[in-house]
Length: 316
Image (cartoon, rainbow, N blue to C red; front, side):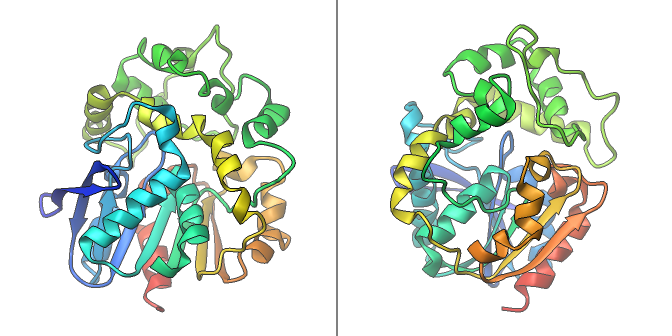
């Protein structure tokens, strides 16, 4: 870990913290919520040892990267713009892209807007979701799961931050990272996230030092930047109107755990396995469903996930 280099790169009006290691073809890793570059620590070491330059930024609003105050500064156009600027600054024409959770959503958008900058994509956890021109995403989630669904609860600025503030940050991180339930969290206001059960013990793949690293960074930065991604869901939908119906035209491998809450959203399994996914992502080459694995698969099964990434990108 001490061989990983940390730099600050100016891009798109912000300063971005970037962790990187190795030399060779570049692989850009995009983390999710509530995570950091650190979520890719295992993959950075694995791929750099196999002749790649592995690059993992803290995305806008996270860790040691700037967090603009305005909610509307967190649209996918801003985030993709940050990443294109980062590649330009580093002098990189094309990358292998790897995303997880929100990072996967950003990666799908990256490939929609700037496919010319992507050699191939490995996405974890969040399958492509074609834009539905008839309903906004938060409205669709509310219709499916009700007002207590965590994404609906994240919408009101300040509300969830106050809730999170009533819990020790390390304990909160454990609640998030150690969850193995395929059910999406529905959190009534009167219970709050503080009322979610504590995990009985840390899973074997997660150590106190990992939890403390996350907790330290979120204590410094707060959660608002990350929550603002959710608050821009409907705005993203409006901004993405010109790309309605656009297919993903880069080679893709998709990996998901069979206990991942994203895999259990109604209709997602059918979309992935019954032809919809392949229709919208015509260069989809592989779908891997990992048994007994939950949402944070790149940390839960680091060796297998790293091998899956390597075995795919080495073809190109």
